[in-house]
Amino acid sequence: MPRSLALRALLAAIFLSGSSAAALAADASPPPASKAPSPAAGQSTAALSPVDPRLGLAAAYLSGRHAEANADTSKAVSFFNYARDLDPNNNRLIEDSYFLAAQVGDFAQAVPSAKRAFEANPRRGIAPVVIAADAYRKKDYQGAWAVIEKIPAQSVNSFALPVLRAWGAAPLKPAETALAELTLLKNFQDTARLVDVMGGMLNEHYGLKDAALANYDTLAANIENERTSVLRIVVKGYHRLGKAPQAKAAIARFEKAHGASPILDAMTATLNQPAAKITPQEGMSEALFAAAELLLQNEPNLARMQIATAYAQTALHVNPNFSVARAFIGSAFTARGRFDEANAMLSSIPKGEPGNLEARMQVANNLAAMSRTDESLAVLRELLKERPTWADIHIAVGDLLRREERFAEAVGEYSAALKLRPATAEENWTIYYTRGISYERTKDWNSAEKDFKKALEIKPGEASVLNYLGYSYLDRGVNLKEARRLIELAYTKRPDDGYIIDSLGWMLFVLGEYDKAVVHLEKAVEAAPADATINEHLGDALWKVGRRTEARYQWQRALTLDVEDAQRASISKKLEQGLAQK
Image (cartoon, rainbow, N blue to C red):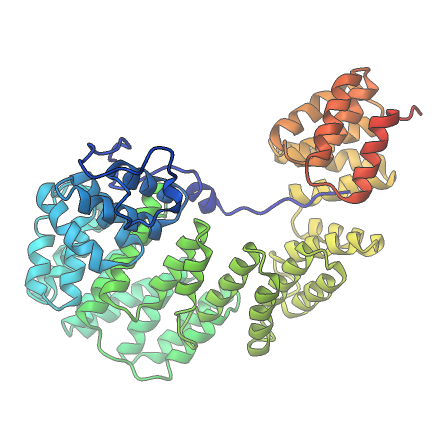
């Protein structure tokens, strides 16, 4: 039976790597032991509350590290705070405490520890950002500027200094002083657009409307190639300046390039609402959020993701109405597998706000990831009532039903999505592919084959489709020459994919080239050791070349993995009787 390839988010892999970036490059050794009492010998710390007085410093610290490595940041905060209270002069614990508290948005805990950390070492960590953001939220602009001024040019925050200094100066200094802080951004490709993004808002703040309009016009001139976040800034800027036609034109050009979406509809709807003057808090929150986005533009890793999450939380702390930051943080929690926290954050985005529907889609996906299928479907069905013409919801429902092996229902959802999408949309290949899989599993091979071919017509050379169609031919014993061509082409596209290597090996087995089949199937098992079918295939090939003890081992291993009843019966028969000779 063909196997569809699991789709994994890159950031999820980064987040789940188990690395620790707390305290930003601090070594992972525990702090010196304190004289606080430790748990009794043999007693598990798992049953203890983070505030249980039986928990000693070392146990609390290691429990915090364990919670952090398992992406349970809230629990890690509790452990580190407790450890810090046991050893209040330990700088490592102070750093861990504020950094993790900032990531979960607990600024009541983060700010006091950040102040102590900043006093101890102003170059280390994001403590000054946390302190300044808290002061800015309270409109203590002098206090915020006093901290921002002390941020060293060579520190983990240096990349964000131009925008932080610009908005730090905005409530206190002349326009030319604040705008001059942005000059450094022109020197780098990744930050050049921020000159106009931040410049537009700063010019608005100072009442320089013509200059602000020029900034937004510059961004709008190339809006088709910008991110949605830049479009959002342009639309809001035009709206505040009374230029609704320009805002609508920017949205229309972006939609033509990227397709319609609820977030664009919501942006358009905001143009019918009164526009309030930009505030310093709004500007600073945008600066902090821009810094969070910058961190993830190139080669994101765990440390960058943790810092970006903390920056986004500071943006939300400064401006609690900043829904875009909520969406960012929710996505970050999702990537780390913290689905309940993610859903709580995503669900806090008000209805009608740009991004609300997309956030609820993510909530549904997270519920599905927690095997709460009925709840996930309920969220998606509710979305369909509100937006019956949004193809992405039908696709999400189809994907969920397909994972639940409700293939006939999935076909209906994919078909509905195709009716709503432009016939020429390049992204349609994925719908034809997944509908083809669903057709194949309902034994409607003719329809499945048509969909696979249509997917390849739209996106020739797509390895996953080549592999599935080629393997399907093998499975049916038809079009073997074409099957070989498709699978070999898929292998050239993704030579390290265990499922494609398995298809190549199995093709050689079906064609009687058993020695070659063994070579590839051994590689396939190395690449995907937990797949029962691949282990079974290797067992079959090993039997054919006379390595029967090894063959039985592979069949026995296959039975320990996730196998359907029919496959289990077939493998058990092979263990009893061997492989029938043809």
